[in-house]
Each structure stands twice: as structure tokens, then as C-alpha cells.
Length: 345
Ligand SMILES: Cc1ncc(COP(=O)(O)O)c(C=O)c1O
Image (spheres, rainbow, N blue to C red):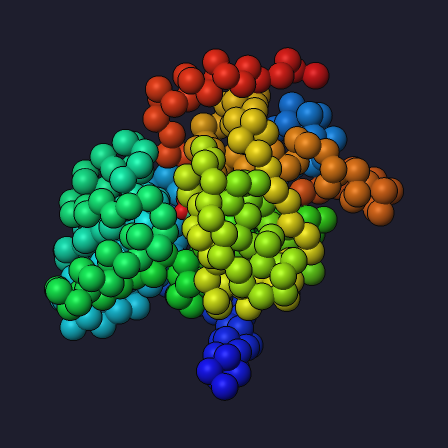
């Protein structure tokens, strides 16, 4: 009985959000976020055998698309809600985004982050004035901590991916990319953690008829596993350098929206992510963090290009969201040493 009620709730949720809601979010945050470029690189095109459109969310405020959803969600709170302060839980980029939104509204932000969060993300959250509580290593650990914090302070939780406003805010990245690319893309590659970015992308791409492909680390493939199971499943995240793509389970509304439109899912290992990251740095002159390089790893692997070329009979046009760029320079140096970029073709 409980399951039936729950199912009914999420189907209604997915039916009641669409591309118009993403356009509404775009209008609300216009001027507050960067309209990031959709970069083109002849060298990357040659390496991938495709026309690649790289949506550079590494150049977004706080260095990731997360600014979009957080600014929209916090902007929609009432004055009374905002005055209670805001709370969130995050591997680091959503924490920075919430800290940014809080500082713009002159309110306090408390965030629960993993004990192994990259130093660059910890420093940025602190620099934006938010208070950090470290909580375990998994997304469940930090979610539990955030709810404890809420019980104590009465603050408002800004969900990292599962809320409608977050999904619509994140969808604005895809809205821009599809405008910037002009002609319809043949495929759009989107990295998945909890599913905020991909659910927002699907709302827009479904309307435009652009197929969306999910990308996850092989060690943490909660979305692909859920698609295969036909329902949301939890995974035990293994180690991966893509720290933003490690939630134990995708969000309910996220899965309900994305499962309807996603055309296929890709898993990438850390070697492929590391090589994509250094290839982007060397040949597109773009610095991204590992989570932001995952989509390029799929493009470089060639399988999607082969499939599309066979079907279309021409070089495919592929969009790839470079979701974030919060990478320490020491980590960049280590990755360049471990994964030397390929020579220019
Ligand atoms: C750089 C980066 N890319 C992708 C994601 C995944 O986003 P979502 O949780 O909306 O799927 C995150 C999440 O933290 C991230 O920081």
C-alpha cells in the first residue's frame, strides 16, 4: 500500500514539471549566473571523430553548474524561510553554491561535507562564509547530519539534487547549450551524481528531441543500475576520482524524470576520466575536475560516435557538459603525470 502511494506521488511530480519551468528558472536567475560558453576545439573533434560542443560550466560562478540550482532555489524561499538560515549536504560544489546564495542574501549557511572532501572545495566554502560540519564519507552520512542540524536550528534544507527548483535551475545549462549549438545535437552527454543535472537536461532535451546519455564512474553507477533494474537502487560507492558523482542513490523525482528520456547510459573508469581531463587541459585549454571530465571520456572512447555515425551516415554533433572545474593545481600536476595527454592528431 505504502509503495502504491509513493509511486503515485512521483509520477505526478514528473508529469508536473517541464521545459517551461526550466525557462522560468532561466528568467529568474538571468544576470545572477554566467552564461557559460559552449566551447569548440578542432583537436578534440579530431580525437573524438565528432563535432563536440563543450558546455563550460567549469567557468560558472563557484566553478560548477551547481550555482544555477542553488541561486534559483534560495531565491524562491520566502523572507521568513531565509531568515531561519539555510542548511545543505554536499560533496563540495553544491555546498559552495549554497554558500554563495547565502552570502548574496546576507544569511547564514551550514553545510555537511564528507571527511575526504577535496581541500579546494573546503577552502572555497569557508571563503564564502559558510560553516562546515564534516560527516562520514557517504552521501547518506552527510544527509543524516544535515537533518540533525535542521532539527537543532530550524534552518531550511536546500536539497543537493532532489528538489524541483534545483532540477529546473540545473536545466538552464542545457537550455543555453541547445541555443548555443544552433542546429539540433545528435546526443547530449550528462554526468550523474544524484541526478539534478540530468533531470533538468531531460526536461529541455525531451522538448527539443535531443537524446540524452548518462555518464557515471564504473565504481558508482547508481543511475545506470537503477535504469537496468527498472526502479531506483542504492549502490555501495567504490573509490573514484570523480568525487561529485558518488551519491549512493539518485533522487526520486530525478529518476522519474530522467528514466523517461535517457537514451542510454555509460560507465567510465578512473583511467578514462583522468585521460579525458588531461586531454581537455592540453588540447582545449580547459581545466576541469574529474567529475567534469567524465562526459569527454565517453566522447573520446568512440563507441557513441561509432553508433551515431552508423545510424546517421555522417559525423555526429555531440554535446558534453563539463560540469565543474574545482581542481587543485597539485591534483592537476599529479593527473598530468599519471595520464599524459595524447599527441595532437
Ligand atoms: C562537478 C560535478 N559534476 C556533476 C555532479 C552531479 O550532479 P547531480 O548530483 O545533479 O547529478 C556534481 C555533483 O556534485 C558535481 O559537483
